[in-house]
Image 1 (spheres, one colour):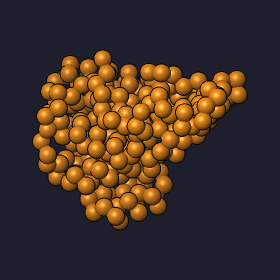
Image 2 (cartoon, helix red, strand yellow; image 1 turned 90 degrees about the vertical axis):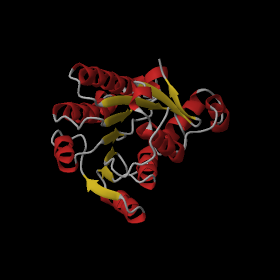
Image 3 (tube, one colour; image 1 turned 30 degrees about the vertical axis):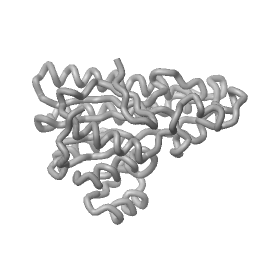
Image 4 (cartoon, rainbow, N blue to C red; image 1 turned 90 degrees about the horizontal axis):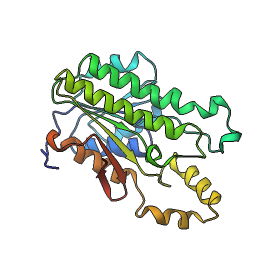
Length: 251
């Protein structure tokens, strides 16, 4: 991917910036010079992040609320929107789920993706804008200990692809991309899942993780998203797997 380095004029909203990959992504974009609007439901982590990084503006909001996406997009007029926020699934096999626990990622992750992608098309964002939806590698491999998580993440990828097509049909010049991070023990979301799957397979955590190579870190995720935002739009694909080695285009 060829790129342009200056991000100082690329106002970026990162939804889910308080922890894990979202925090790494918000930090990396701010360090690359982008004005970043860090959105999270909890104030203290993003206020602390903003205090450490001068180009981050904290916004405390529930991104799944149907009114929040339109309000923040109208207020900040971003050129980049990155959706990382989502619920932590209950790590149990299917028969130990209830419908409420099974569907939590449909009620949160899919809802957030739908509201924000819809608003990006309706406003619409200015020409040349980018929308990146952080899905999950579980959308490809399944996630039998996480209820409806894998299906919800696959639906996020579908929503992103639908939006990409609608933007093209309407000649909006907005690029929609799905990024699917591989499971990692280095986030609050991934750590219990890794432990559970290692136990299920009769392996230690270290043995289980060997199949995935270098673990994905928030810093690697941040560097990968900076690369993606900087990339010439002509070279940006519809979806990517994100691993410890960076971005890998998906068919």
